[in-house]
Image 1 (tube, one colour):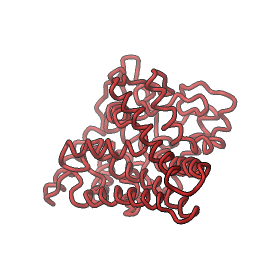
Image 2 (tube, rainbow, N blue to C red):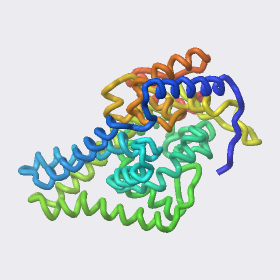
Image 3 (cartoon, rainbow, N blue to C red):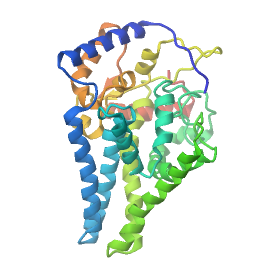
Image 4 (tube, rainbow, N blue to C red):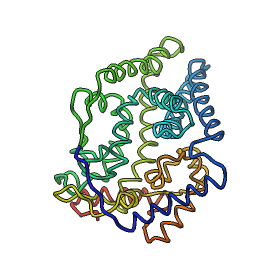
Length: 359
């Protein structure tokens, strides 16, 4: 991956003032950037609910109860990823580094996915070069969905805003079955690839087998229902998780309000790194207590990209500082209600499908 160079602009001054004001807030209130007691409670709550619903799944007295508990367990595994995995990957869920690493590995492996691969491309690619094709690994080169102006335009792309939701339903299952597996053998639909150590490849397949054991094999052995129902529950779980996941994250970086900048021939961008983060993230309902608690602050994504060293439990207090500082320095903060963010996402897909330049 080529190392890109940034330029100085109003975003540089904004970022300097923002970090100073945020640090002042933490110092004045005697707080750590990490999670503290509130985050400890959330960690226990979400892991506890996953364990509870799994036990209830195995002890289900009826088929209806089995489906309900199985699907609730799957949803809370995802919410654990939102609320624990993400902050732990950035080292801010708790103070202890080893405990952060353990929480991250555990919560990610609960999904049957590989923690190393995700952390590598998330922290070293997506956060550094957000929405830059060829540098941000989250910018896909998927022939079915056109996401950038440089991607070849096909006739069927004009319908992508209509068929994309059906593809989104397969997101979680595709991640579990194909995405990392193909990465392990050197193939990826992503615009860049990463080298995966042999031990991580072994862990990748080991934890997928462990996941299949707990999600399919053990229920077949324990519950008094046919294997067909277990497989249906497994499939429904992934469909529901896919809907939630793509609904939460798809609107943040794929929107007709955000940009997909490209560097010049010398690998230089005509903006600062802080400005890049501001023009590539769209927030929704960033002051919502409910969304902060359930989504782990993913609805306030811009401040996370600028300050990933701060746990999401602090966002409700520091977003007003962030919003006011952006306004003061003339840096646009893209923020809207969720329904408008969703509309913007589908407008983006339609524009890309019609060959219209997004920005």
